[in-house]
Length: 269
Image 1 (cartoon, rainbow, N blue to C red):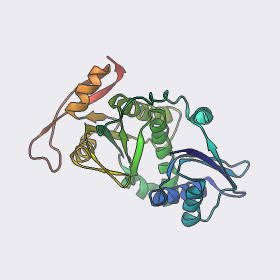
Image 2 (cartoon, rainbow, N blue to C red):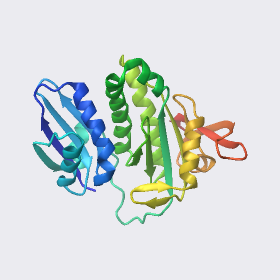
Image 3 (tube, rainbow, N blue to C red):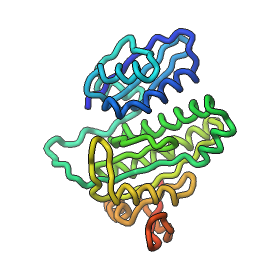
């Protein structure tokens, strides 16, 4: 879908209010076929900007209208080159002559201790923190050409056509959160990631099936800051030059026997 950026003139708005508005947009994006990738807030000038994929500009406006009523003052179409200065390098486009298949790598993220954070910080501060969390993950998704399937409340489910892109995304997510901590970001946010590969079922912009279930359960089994993957992802990733090491067997909910999982190391083999 095309990329669009919009601008909202919001004199007097606070970062908390803009974060809440963005969160409301995420709750309605699927209804209108919109995928919000990121947003920026310029408090000094009272302006907010949203970056999203949508079929039409009207679909973005429809989300804003229903979720909070803050209609954009301007919406423009942008290319991926236009957003490099905001999101960093984006991978070169896939050769259009290449055929795509039903094979996908599914990635789940989960923010550890999200319930405790909500109780300790309160809803308003927690929403600001969750928005920061979402931006780190979505930046990695855009850079690695992943497709966000859904927001799970304290994490994101994404789909990739190439296992290497999924592994690159996982590493970038962890680097992003580590950089935030090193830069003094508090409280510390720690995310666990799980991945599996196969041929999930696509329906109405959602993805279902055993591959999705396995990726979700592997994510549940990971420790904070850890990336765990299925055996198939390990096999394919090693061929692409990634370092993935045995992490033992884990008892996954809903699976009758322990499952072998592997941990992604940050450096290439």
